[in-house]
Amino acid sequence: MKVIVQRVKTASVACNGEIVSKIDQGLLLLVGLKQGDTIKEVKYVARKVAKLRIFSDNNDKLNLDINEISGKILSISQFTLYGDTVKSNRPSFTTAMNYKEADILYKQFNQLLREEYNIEVLTGVFGEHMDVALINDGPVTITIEKNNS
Image (cartoon, rainbow, N blue to C red):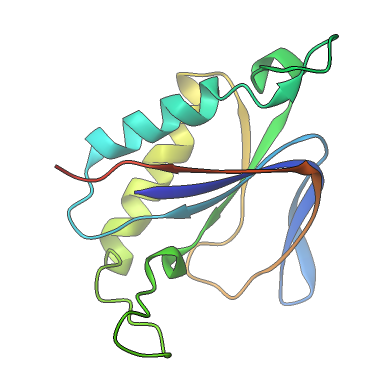
């Protein structure tokens, strides 16, 4: 499982020209799942995201997590994080998790963030073409990855 975390001032996602979710200060997550990922990887990454201290405190140090700033999460499914370009310039997505399994784990990931970590999580539309807009704050961009082993 791989998640690209972007600290944002604002972010939104639209499908077919209509905004389906929008947040102000918080995190934009691009969430990728690969074959073999389980709830074990999902729990690990959810905990890391929830506890990630990338918001500034009163001394301008990256010391606060999302709950401490009352931020929200915009979570976007992103199978292309597992695009492999080693053998070609056209990405291969053979290691990405299949649609049905990925949908289940993606929903569990978002639910964990909501229920275990008390974070408001908005989402895009799984499996759909989405237009994602954001203002990256900093910029601050972090990759969190947990390999299924």
